[in-house]
Length: 98
Figure 1 (tube, rainbow, N blue to C red):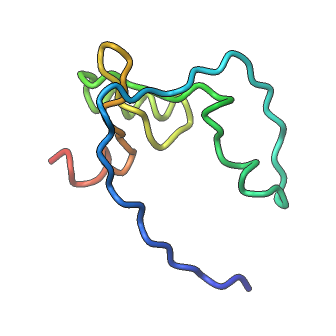
Figure 2: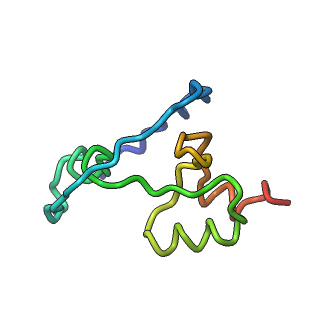
């Protein structure tokens, strides 16, 4: 049986003005297996285009975008494409929208 490990949440950090993200040109994913290392299972944003949403997008549309992309979070970008935040499925489906 695998021991359950508790992890501390990452600290909240403000992004500097003009924070951006990498836009890859090509990616051919390899299938993962049960014994694949974690680094092979995680999404490398140097190889896969980041899932983004504009800051003015309604939360219902953001939720649908996550479902379509098969992701649980989206980078929020402004009109220039600079990252201004992050929205997660938990943000949208939890109590925050209330």
